[in-house]
Length: 244
Image (cartoon, rainbow, N blue to C red):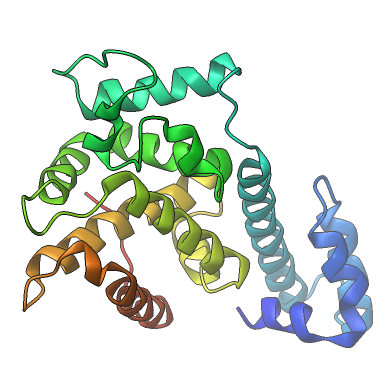
């Protein structure tokens, strides 16, 4: 992490920082450049540590780049792949309930705001949908349990909308580098970003259903802020884990 901060804040290494943010950059060339500026010998332990650190930084930058590309990709109902992902989400979340029509009030049953989920993905683009789908594909038992709690008659919350809000928070943690140590620990790839998402979704549900006094959807905004603050503390303490 010290190498990351050194690159990020050093005025002497701005060019190297920029290069590490570019897809397909030659990390070895950046290692040589930084080692020269820091006066590290080529075979020194310091240079070896530097190389490991810079490769990790590059990998986390590529996770950010990939996620940002998906956020910029707007949901398009004319795109058959987008539509297939959406239908897959319904079929996995509601395996025993056929969707009557593509435009349907049934979507509210899994926490969308209206009859066409496409409008709910405007803020987070395809990443919002891909994260919802990843959760139910990888952890169907958890996802169905969370949906069941989210469907409580009085303490309900909109499952899909909360999921999209969690995508936004995950992205903010990634962009601000608060997720850096988590990715260094578990793996700097998009799957680990989505594992973080799954962990947070399940944790939010636990936070919601165990809160005293009990919560209603009117409490969501203030309580989600409280939840995010706790997660940021957990990231600093490195207590975030993976779902099992």
